[in-house]
Length: 300
Image (cartoon, rainbow, N blue to C red; front, side):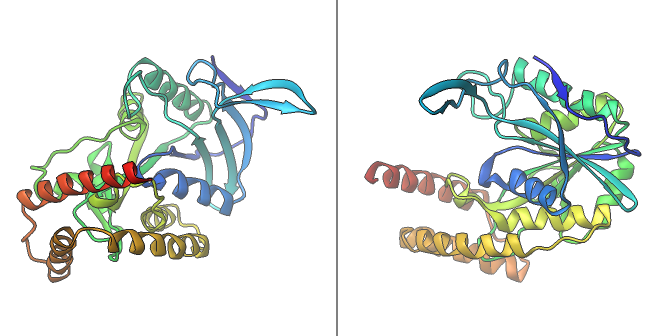
């Protein structure tokens, strides 16, 4: 188990941006699309065999060649005024019977990533993922932010379409983040890095769906681009969102009328900026949406 570097690029105080799969694949879509836009070059990896089961066996010309594992790759790019390192993980290491990354393997993975950050003199690390929110799929997703120190909190407040996670209504100035998107920033702070987590909103009633949610990935990258001072072509996000919106609209039409009525009431409340979304509404929608997806899965 360890880090393999194919190249030792000379980088000047780079920032590290990390992405893994998760709800709506928001984080990995955001980070991997941005990586492609800046044409970052692969330069290393974390060896996978101590973290994951093989996902397949590579066969060529009828011969067994090697086991295939989920990738955990590092990329870099030197941009005008800012060097960047990307880390893309195809899976999050999980403990048996768990959904989110936690336990010894997750802790080891996070520390190996930060070892590379330290080796190249990174000043700041960013993670990104999903914020399951009481919103509507036709509204622009907001971006929830969490930072490792007070100065970063004030900085994040200066970017449009962001809100501190602790300031979300009903959270009582608190919150928690599951998986590596929470573990890694916590370890980063402990090891002396600045750390920021950016989470794009996905409606709670879509959080159980297997669909990607590129609208939220775009919102995350809009904030990242502003922080980093780089230009981004958002056409890939818009193209993907148009395709997914058609599927979501079709799925939404199949919701029972009583669920749609409550969700539409929520949309009206958000647009009017009035606080009419109750905890009772949230619980009722969650219970009925879970039941809807279970029935749908059983019928397929």
